[in-house]
Image (cartoon, rainbow, N blue to C red):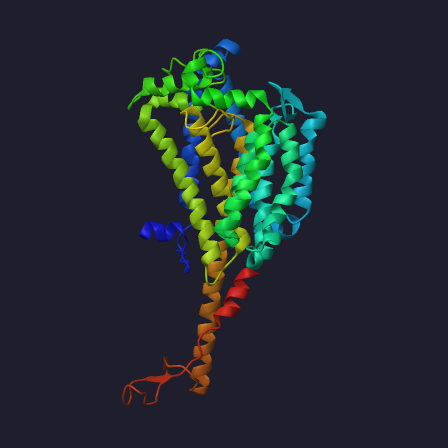
Length: 450
């Protein structure tokens, strides 16, 4: 019960003034996942790096560079207050992201028939990863402005109308997975905001109907679904990746074959350090290693959701844009973790989506570290607001006591030291019981929101 109460947020926030001004547990989980990322990528890419690049450390070296770039971007994002996103994110940020999303179609780099990347020299950047973070901020700001009327159809569907140009551009880039993830994030955020279960179900059904032609009219997507239904029927073609992934999990068993001892990564599965990295890790570290990654991803999502619900439910410091940004990031990580693990284990049709903070690649890692920086910034701001409120209450209390010591009366009952007078506790007790007005919590809350 305590865990459920914490997961869904608390109305009364309390922070230790001796502790750090950020969520230390969240930061520890992020660094644990990054450490596992390096271990997993090294184990999965050592053979591919040696064969293709003549350097077994090639891919892990590049991942170090991506991490460094991600930390630099994250430190920059942490300097931006969340109230900035409420104004700037209303129009300029999504329009800028829309233009950025169109660049791959104009001057992008095509890889395996998909034009999703922009060449930056050091690596190819995928704008759709940044679009996910931008879209979460946009929807959170929209909910902040319209949360009281979000259950109205006209208010509910507006974000989806704005999403149509993003969906068209992503479809032209052959990035169907990002469309599905963004729609899932949007439905989840609007449902928690009070959109109503019936409205969400109906609108989800309509969205599914709109996406159905994108699946049916593309032969390679139909082939993926057919191979998903029976991968062993065409194990050498359409079902090849999935059957290799299943074999990797099977070879791993409970304890695994040992780090770097995977056989499936040796030219049996293409790009083992990207989409199917969890299957290779399952062969290396077994069920125990896979469970460790899943638990850490779950804890990361739980921390984001706890912070989000607390921001929404707080009595003294309610802030919807902070709450829904944190909650949206949690939904983003949930969706991609579920899809990535589901694809490699045969629960879902094959789709190329990265495992958050684990899979090899610069775009995903950098943008997800930026998302974590935004969540840490929210945690920092709430602690600062909490301590400012505490200081305000202390100053108010001191002012009231000082006033009472001068005038000796008021409304409410409180003990105040007054020397030389007989108090309610008896003659010569040195205290007087007086009435004091309660602090105006509404004013305190408005002060905290500034």
